[in-house]
Image (cartoon, rainbow, N blue to C red; front, top):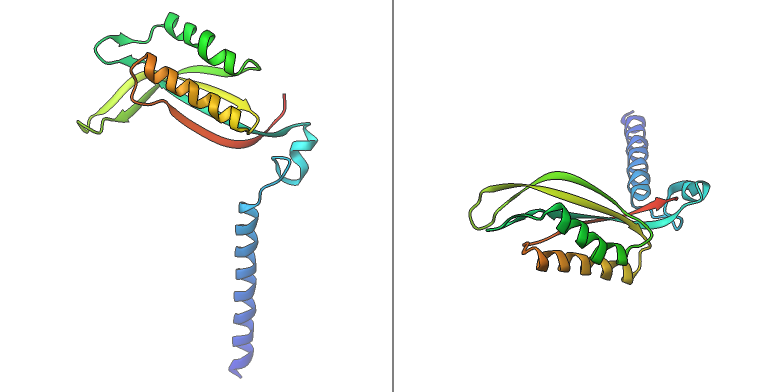
Length: 152
């Protein structure tokens, strides 16, 4: 008489395992059009990379990167590498200094670039980061990269 209860429990366990596998696989799926179910194609989009570059403005021993210096950097370094467009905004950031353990807060800015996923795109992003760290004596420029569907 215990067999029907065991059989029912096994069926429930199978159903739960199937649901878990389905959810897990769908979360890992990638779509060639950059979106699920053809959504990217429906909005006439294409698979792209979105890069957000995070720039601190404080220069140790000197003060901040000025608006004029930032404008020149954008005109001379960033725009020639991504002439099709980008977005910038001012923000405030913080990070922990590894040497002192202190939390450092500073004015900063972000540049968002949407571009094709190519080795050239990644190289141009690296050039921008290297130019900024060298010119403005920064330890690093943060980079966040994600894949998305874009339509312009």
